Length: 419
Image 1 (cartoon, one colour):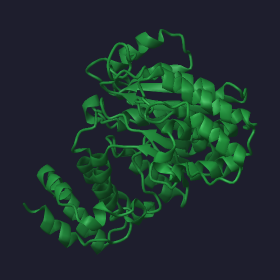
Image 2 (cartoon, helix red, strand yellow; image 1 turned 180 degrees about the vertical axis):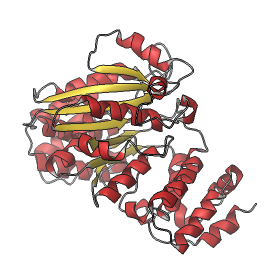
Image 3 (spheres, helix red, strand yellow; image 1 turned 90 degrees about the vertical axis):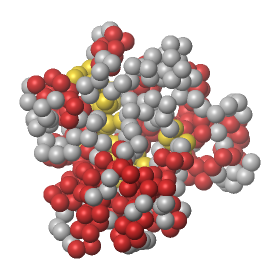
């Protein structure tokens, strides 16, 4: 092992923890879920200085394959919990996620090959994070996005009223009641996750009376361990940031992700950055783990237009236009859970079409951005697929941090898209 960290106790600790991982971490393996918590507790028990743990986190991430991702995740959990343990002001953290066709992932692994027992695991993760600090409370909103397989009802059945701080709500009810966050919708068919998250976050914001109330939305799957929430909470409490977003593209991010999704993502990033330069300091807009100050969220959520998968980009843009540099990026550990994904192959294209509308609504027009907006607006699915298959190397091989640069002109992509 090539760990060059200067303190021998930390070197010995990481080697000892690494020896416990005999296989890659598996989201459906209950023993793996338990082991990562045990290792986080073990790290905390060593009473290392917080800043030293952060330095170690950066080094472990840069060593890529040399250490198990389970150990790297455990370290991030330890850093997260060391911060939440130190919170001295009454703080409420509300968690929101949408469920649509999650009937398999909600099962235990024994009941389905892709079962993640996601409700129990999320609850256990949050109980672990908050259990040692009486100043810290959490609640959760599970929002049924009009699921044809009754995900919301299944969640009710699993919970059986045993968790008073976990609320199962239905987007359909919000639409019927003309809730301000979703009053423009006529049916759940007009939502693709976005409306449900906005409805759940609005309900959360309206439910909390704490001055320190932070609302985090996440994905239904277990890709992001919620024990990392302290990493998102810290910039809002300590740095007066209004939004804190997880990023899979920072130096010390730890990611297991499928290659094709990664390549598609680069083209998506390059194109949206042509239209929304206000967000150029952000790379990963689509990681499903974002935190908002409740007071700030109330200022940007009720008049948001986008109700589908690009909803979070609109919220980030509205936040940045309201207060410059209001967003903090946080490196996290993230494990792809692709087997039961409900996002299709045309999701990126749909989001780009929505971003064109955001550009038209929020950003002063300029000729260069207009040319990109027109190009994206006229892209069909065949055009998009052809671009993916013939992506310029300068984009496909670019470091994501460089995708805000003008690597190619719109004319080049226009010529490529023509079969």
